[in-house]
Length: 454
Ligand code: TYD
Ligand code: MG
Image 1: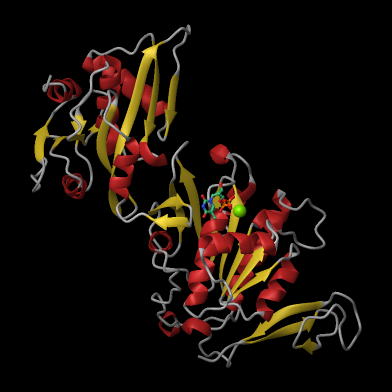
Image 2 (image 1 turned 180 degrees about the horizontal axis):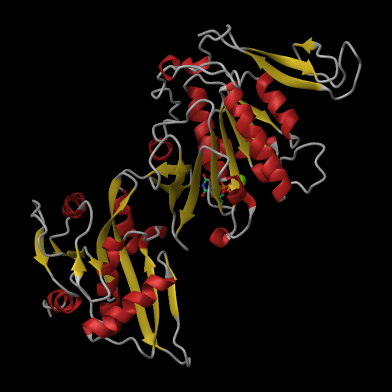
């Protein structure tokens, strides 16, 4: 495929040069050389079969090549899943997460794999020195000989170096560590991030280079940082993890080229991040030995069902207003389900502190897990273990009614695959091989069935 011609153009006199220099060879102005790219042939397809960027030119939709299949797989199965099959040339992807969660690790592993596949990868290491990156690469057991490291904090200079390296893929670790020259704003501050983001979007699109940037987010994600970039970029992936444990969940909160809410599951090992082949087994395993307050369910994350465990603890409170702590689910949902349990199930948490969590660091956004939360809470309040081979599926209404859930068959199949033998379900659920269904119409009935073994 014909490559676009790249070089530098003086913004003062328009002279062109093949390599970057501080001073224009013709008009001798300083710092005026800017990278540019000329389309391969007028109107012809550029890299990856795209129409070369010709801003403003109208064209027929039928003339736009159908290149939906053009993706650069990272060969890291769970990363590719979240990306939607690989990185799309010309797209800008943001990988966010708390410091220390594994962003740099994933980036370096992806860089090495992409380079192994014959792609030119440029890696801007603004966070660490090349020596530190090398140490990490050694630890990860990756060669990395074909990855070009760019230790540069000036964004334009970094981009120029990436062009020099003829990069197919550019990784910037992190967006907070680079700055845009000439902007009277603190590096990593909102103005810098917005400008850097805008430049990168244009740059990636114009040159059809797949670009990934990492961004730090503090706990709760309240810092402006990467959130500012969300609307600019093509895909936003966030790393999440449980308070403890080695599982890492990478979630697509936005993806122009794939399913939103798709999750990739990794385990942090001594040799970097490992794709977890059976996340459900890992989540149930992460839950540990059965105890009171534990209830299994299956949620749908992106395109796949995942079995998880909800865990609750209820202990006598010494506070005037007992505490309600939720991690992995909204505290408002916890309040609501406690209220339903009290009114419709006759089980009061009144003077108990209640804590509810989800195994493996996943977040419950799926109302199908309501019944499992109710069961876990009831089990915690009564301090009575539930049968570990029984799962719970159902949305719970304020009336206490158990409502049907979407994709119930796929959830049940996943639970059966993991060896769960029974499942409480909404009335009218069609049977599935391998798991016995226990239809329950309301919370009171659910509690009776759940505790009937004792
Ligand atoms: P890192 O990728 O540096 O996080 P981020 O870029 O998101 O800040 O990950 C750092 C953590 O991962 C650190 O606590 C060490 C750990 N780690 C491993 O457990 N195994 C490894 O192979 C590597 C490279 C890191
Ligand atoms: Mg890092």
